[in-house]
Amino acid sequence: MRKAIIDSSTYYDQRRSSFMRGAIEMLPLCVSVIPWGILAGSMAIQAGLTFWQSIGMSAIIFAGAAQLVTLGMTMAGASVVTIMVSVFFITSQHFIYGLTMREFVSCLKTKVRLPIGFLLTDELFALSETKDKRTELTPGYLLGAGLTFYLSWNIFSIMGIIMASSVPNLDKYHLDYSIVATFITIVVPMIKKISTLAGVTVSLVLSMVLSYYQFEGAIVLAGLCGMFSSVIVSVMAKEQ
Image (cartoon, rainbow, N blue to C red; front, side, top):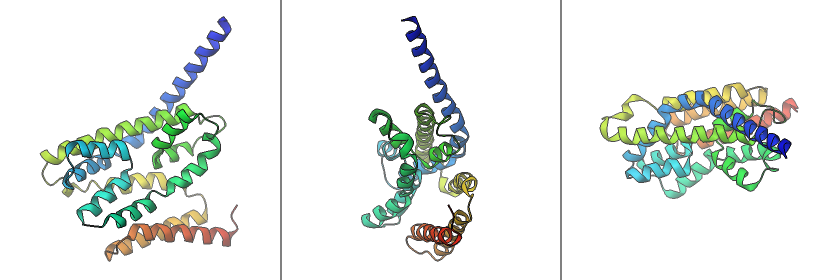
């Protein structure tokens, strides 16, 4: 009986330790996303959302790029269909994230899988890919890291919501640069193959050129072209 109690105590200590390790290792990415969260919150107010609607958008949708694109296109007068198609392609990488993590997550209970699925972001996926799925990656680690980022995102969004009504011309501070900086820190370490480099390069160049000429759906088209380029180069180079 005593042995069972000790084993149970050790088990919960390990879970708590794993949770805290995930939370701590996510903190650097939380710091880098401060301007991004502030921008999302302020844009929500500028787009005409109320205080509680703006908070709800960050709390329920919890997708930085999708939120910013939706708000930007709403203010530009884009149609609902255009917004839905754009957001679908912008967030479609989550299908890949889910398939990549399926082997690890599929054996977990539903009450654990669902929170991980909701908390799964570019940042959490990038962090999980640096861990050995057999020894280092645990459900507690994912939940700790994901929940830390979720809370941080909402706190920074609330800051932006409050600042939108107290700091004039908040958009003049170019907080959107944080989006570029954040994705650079995520993407660059993952470039380990020539096909990945080709896809990133094509996406980067096309997005800049099409955006310069104010082509509607520039980011979506650039991303799709980048993916196709990566597949073509991978096949030609016979990568494994």
